[in-house]
Length: 304
Image (cartoon, rainbow, N blue to C red; front, side, top):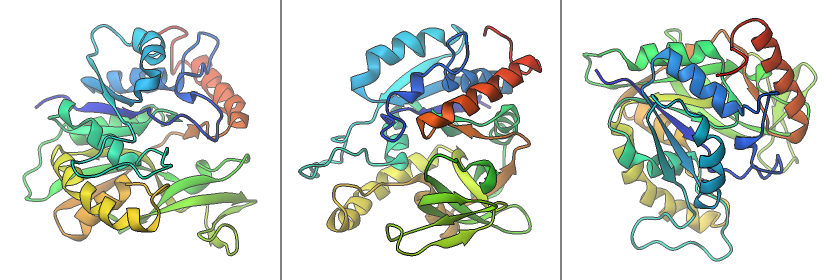
C-alpha cells in the first residue's frame, strides 16, 4: 500500500486577506501555516506533498515554502491558471477569478496515483486531523464503493469576528456517513450562532454553532480525478451561461454527486483539535497566539 499524498491548494492570491497569506510567517522562526501542515502530515504517515500554485508566485513560493520542505519528503508542483480549460473552451472576457477548488485538484491529476488528502494552504487543521485521515487512507477496503472521507469541524470553531466566510454545510447520518454538503459562500457570526445569506444580505438564515462543516480537508481515492475531469466541461456548459465571471467548480459539489449516485461513501472523521485560519488580516494575531501556545506545550518544536 502506497503512503497517501497530501495535496495543498495554494493558488489563491488572498484577495480578502490582502496578500500572499500562503507564505505569511506565523511564528518568530518564520514558519507559515503550510510548514505546520507539512510537519503534521509527514509525522502522520503521508509520503509526498503536491502543491497547486500559480505561475506568478512560483519563484517566491519555491524559495520560501519549498526551501523548507524536508529533503526526505518528495514534493511536486502543479499550476492552476484561469486559462487551464478543456479543449474548445475560452476564458470569458473580463474573467480573472480561478475556477474553484475542484478545478485546482484537477490541475494536480498528473502527479497523483494513490489515495490523497486535500487541504487549504491557509488553514491550520491540527495534529489529530492528519493522523485520522492518514489512518483512513492507508486502509484497504473490500466493498464496491469508493471510500472517501472528510475531517469535520463545528461551525462555531470556524467563523471569524472579522467578516464573512464560506463553508460547506454538512448533513450527516447516525453512522457518521456524509449525506450531502451545501456550499454557503457568505456566513457571518452573530453572537451565539451564525447566519448565511444567498441574496447579498436581503435575507438571512440562522445556523447553529454545532452544525458540522467542511473545511476542505478531504480524503479521496484516485478515481475522483477522472470524475473531476469528466465533470468540468459539463460545469462550464451550465455555469458560464449564468455567471461567467465568478462561477466556481467546488469539490463538495462533485463529491456530493458521487454520494447521491451511489458510487462513493464519505466517512465524517471528527478531529479533536481546534481549527484556525486567516481569512482576514485581523485573524493573524489569533493564529500566531494559538501556534505559540502549541509550541509552549511541546506539540511542535521551536525549529522543524
